[in-house]
Image (cartoon, rainbow, N blue to C red; front, side):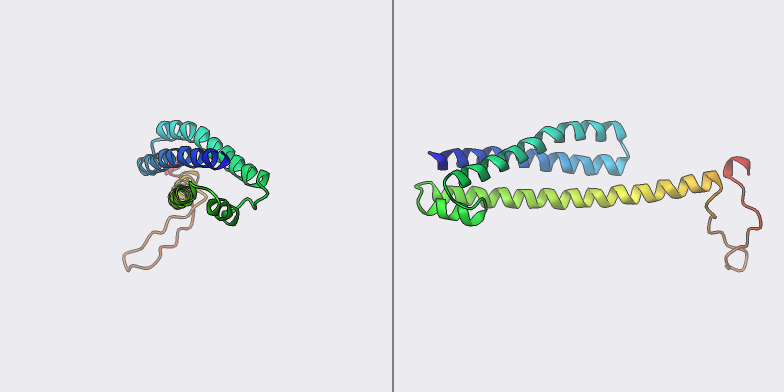
Length: 155
């Protein structure tokens, strides 16, 4: 009976992970377009999926521990050996692992986009405030020496 519970949790989490991956891809598009309202909406949609994935992960671990198995892949393999649904359990576990890996990769990619956008915005604010020296060149192609810096608002 516990194996069917685990199988259902895996099935549910595969659907949740697919939805999360779709949201992560949409998040990338919103980041590239700098669409902040869309980003906020996507974050609101992601939160319950992440909470559910976390909760189901804990339930799977608790189920394995209640069967006196380790709460990891080794425990799942031990359960699969004695379950008529063992093949399905392992297949769904692998599918979920692959989807979660893709989610992590997409999240890392989005993190890089966020850091790049932060860098650009920081530099632009520095130019506007007059705390950042723009790289200008003189007629010979050398770096120009700017004696006095002024914010662009005062230029």
